[in-house]
Length: 420
Image 1 (cartoon, rainbow, N blue to C red):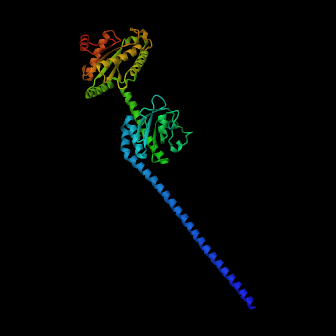
Image 2 (image 1 turned 90 degrees about the vertical axis):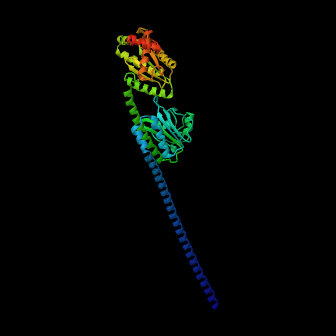
Image 3 (image 1 turned 45 degrees about the vertical axis):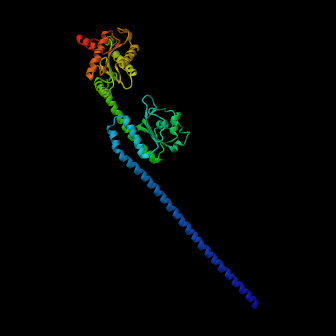
């Protein structure tokens, strides 16, 4: 009996110890689990805090970027205002656009392309930065392919994310342009309404995405306003300076430009020649064909003049059927050569009803006077060229004479040029 009791006691004790041990293990495990749960909660909270900090840092970075852009714009406002209110030349506006972009986006290269006058293409007007390629001013950008052309055709800004899609935004067929387009991060059209004025393209910008696009849009809008202002001023100025029939400079503008040319020639110790001519027997042409036909003949003659002289020379309608060309940096032999080129081009052109003219075609007679030997002032040069013109008329027309002192004596004896 005692033996059985002892056995039972041992079993009871063993069972109690086991339960106690089990309870202890359960308690320890639950505390550990609670500890682990608290650790996970703490880690999750820390992750949320870190993410919030990163978000705040990003927000601060964006604010700082916006602040830098705003500060740059504000610092440039005096120059921008000056251009928008006073600049009348594209050559002043375009470099300023590049400077603004450099301040805002700190790119490695900036290009400003303007709409070509002759066709729908673009031409390079400005390039700056550390990585500017071999493109020179005037390089043409066709509108058929390329990222610059795509931004122009679709009238929308494009960034590096969009450029990554080569199938939709292929590179230009021009190797020189393609080399630049590989590095571009932004392209923005310069628009006035729906009218395309140009494209700004940049590469290597520190800022990308919406902030950079926004900055480019601000610059392109400022550029559009300045360019439109310049074009409007140029149109008004040309209307005031030009002869409405031939679109050549008028007499008043000729005098002003000749005065400027003489000052420049004197300062640089250069020659300057003036070619003065009129149309032979133009009254006969008008009487036979009518004044409308005469006006058309003068328009055609003006086009021939423009095509026959250098880009820097100054062509003007002096009055009626009389015209003048200021030949910059041209000696008397050079002036005579240039004048003969114009005379020959007019004589060889088939004017309507030109065969009915007394000389069998439309011709001119002219005179050349040169600074400083033939005069130092506008009035002296005009008088000398007019004397030489009279000598050409007297010699039979359809020719050019250079001024000689004898020409002035002959004109004084007869009292002027007389009939054309």
